[in-house]
Image 1 (cartoon, helix red, strand yellow):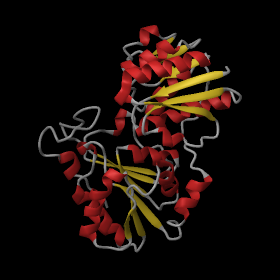
Image 2: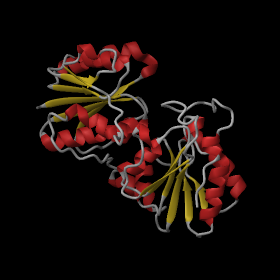
Image 3: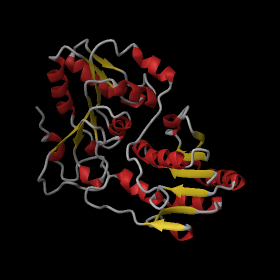
Image 4: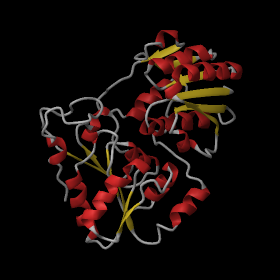
Length: 320
């Protein structure tokens, strides 16, 4: 096996949970050229990766043009194996048109009939997304390792070192989806509780999250709570989380950053449930959720608003 392409063009967390696939393939084929295709915005996760040769970027705002350009490039490489972890039509088209010697992916992909090998995307009890992904290489690797992994660089480590001279907690209070984000009141209660420990609290997020995190700061008025939204890259955030006393997150991307760092984590699950297979993988982890709600889960993904209007799965969260 000389040339391998892995396709995962979904969200941040999906890319992180795909990492065991290339980790295991590299262990089995240490001299193979491994390339990865991700959605635009997620490429920084793999910056400076020690064994991924090239990270290709799929710009979905120019979908047809990108499909054409990418497949032309992939055909020239002549991959021995193309693994498609995504179930969208566009990724299936790229997989088929790239014309690798072997292609494999999930049966749920509408273009899977063109793949060499097709696998069921199983929602077995107790299965995590990493287990579903590793199913695609189960005939190649008998006992794969499950842990996701990222590689913050030396510069990333140095960037966050200045924040690590005191004991600290990290919080990532935001999510792309309203119903996957614990309510503001929950985060304020948690911040006030942790502030009593006299430890520093770092609020993490993207540049777009800065205003919401500033709202939390304005209500808390504690100099030990520091807004780092937009100040750190994804890999730098992972490096910071790895040294925290604990990390508090939603069912969102930062949860998987913690898993990739094996960092202690407490995750709030609101409208979604861990049984979907996206729970924490850190050795030290806790899940906080409201159980026994007949309306939960209300879908595989989050919503922009609670379909029932009461958001009991968020407002009812309790922690000690």
